[in-house]
Image (tube, rainbow, N blue to C red):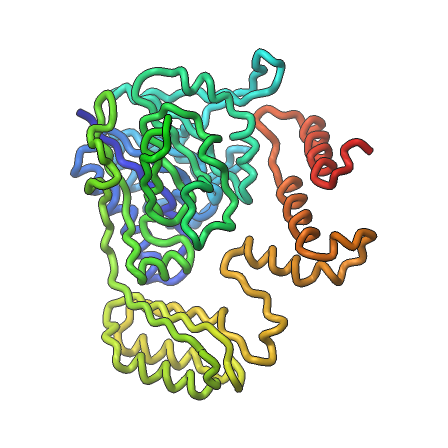
Amino acid sequence: MYKFAHLADCHLGAQKYPELKELEIKAFKRCLDICINEKVDFIIIAGDLFHSNLPDMGIVKEAVGKLKEVNEKEIPVYINYGSHDFSPNETSIIDVITESGLLKKLFDAKVIRDEYGEEKIKLNFTIDEKTNAKLAGISGRKMGIDDTYYEMLDKKSLENEDGFKIFVFHTAIKNLLPDFLLKMEGIDIKRLPRHFDYYAGGHIHKRICEDKFDDYGIISYSGPLFAGFPRDLEMSAKGEKRGFFIVDFDERINETNFCKHKNFYELDLAKYEFLPFEANYKNSNQLYEEILSEIKNKEVEGKIVILKVKGELSGGKTSEINFHEIRRILREAGALHVSINHHGLISKEFSEVRVKGETIDEIEENLLVENISNIEVSSKELKNKQGAELAIKLMKTIRQNPKPNEKKLDYNNRILKESLNVLDLEES
């Protein structure tokens, strides 16, 4: 019997506050300590080990030191790029660490032509020496432009391979997205190759485990070890558990109900306090007094406090609520860290013009919808949501990076052709 660990979305270097930076690296170190203690045979990192492809060297030093301990225990660490640590010319810090032998990159592809003469991307398997497990995967790309890889993927060669197989990916599966992420870029489950025993996912910052799809094994997202974004802290404060999976296997995964068993190792690094407030048409003074009254009665010592304020004020300005004072009171009460989100709070006078949205994609779409009517275009049909959606599709197309081994001229021609197709101008 063997076992491997599956983690993702460490986002080392994402945090700016010292107390959160400490927890961020502590989560990574504790995770690897557990892997060593549990004597896992190998570790999979499904993307976004770092928050950028060239992170702060202090963070890199800490991470490399821990990876060196793992390497000394002869535990290989397999990794794919995530959308944050991706580098099209292989100059990411991931590549530097890979050269040292502490990481092994999984994405190994070449462009071939199938029996119909169409270009396909063929992935090569990486075989773990000790367990004979076969790993293959696709790296993540920003703005969901890794779609092209899945469109061109030679799935037949992957599906026909025998043995215990793991597919590692860093993209959202639309069929698995929770409600709050429904607008997230992603792919349909059918884009993944079938007949793998385990699908180790990254990119979705929520723990997900499913075994309900025919011809597909267990599909799981471990979620972040700590937090890459403010929303992660909010979700943790609401009760979302953070950690990673350890999977037992021989010729197959041993638990018949894997997703219902305790294969998830929680990293309980901090206590949280979530304090939500709704304006509910109170004026600024009323809401401020309510917040002050509530926080003075809360036990927050040693906790990460997430205070979220939203809604429309009946009178007064949002600036009349002294959030600096609120933060000071909570810190003096012993809070480890205070995060205040009042982006959803608006004054009545601005309620008609405020562009809403919690994610970059939502804000971008809403900005386009709000402003498309002010753009001079010849077609009236484009001065509404249809025009905004077209603009988003066009931006997604021109943001694509070259495919593996694609020549510059071929890349330029492909982007031009796909852009004309989006605009329904291909024939002209």
